[in-house]
Length: 321
Image 1 (cartoon, rainbow, N blue to C red):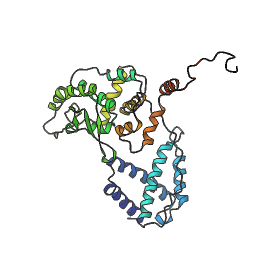
Image 2 (cartoon, one colour):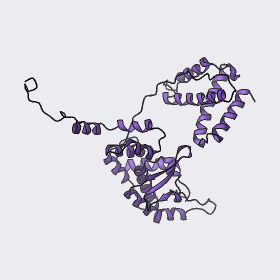
Image 3 (spheres, one colour):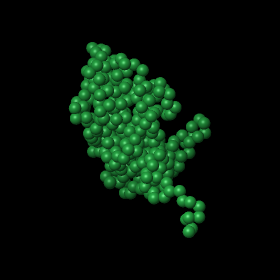
């Protein structure tokens, strides 16, 4: 095993054990660093001590130069920035543990990432989407409950798929959620979503669970598939898109759109930014702040209600009198 490969193995063990990274996050770091090590091999660098600032900068330029079959850039600025985060984290680890004298990535800048504005649905579209479930059977009850829960709580699709029966306290109207980095939070769930979820648990879920084969492991998952086992994330995407199609919504739909919509509508109706941050499970308030930019109607309403001359019509000649 080369010295570089040995350091990477030690680094990944540190990420998993010391930092407690979730499997998905750990896999992303592995993917980014595989590309980095492949680049190092391509330029003839196999000794970590030979990696300098110019090497890391060259890697960033290499990522920028990658093109797809259509001649367009293969990687978005956000993807390149994410790769650089992994490289920096690795080199910081090596420097901190004394494997390298300095961190060669410290001064290398990431490409500027345009701040994306979440594409939230308006409230009428959400109402149409939630009503876009065609069946009253067990799967229809499940689909309706899933859509209501996603919009009512703003939880991520991975969090919804991971919900267990013990995570629900519908009497008090709260749901316990295990978020990124295995951080637990308690999220309120509204009366409408609670009622739809209770109907599903009382009827549809029992019918879906009855379809479980004898060989399938038992599960306490809230949302089940037609085989009586935990529903997949991909199936949830299909549920959202199918409901949107029936509702005639001409917009790019995903479970995350309901998360965006939940946050946007709460802020539109006066919710405090810190409250929304806690609800969504954002580690930083800056992540939540992007939702304050998505509603021009809200800005216009506040302006007109607050500015002393927003609605005043000044008669000609009177202003200079």
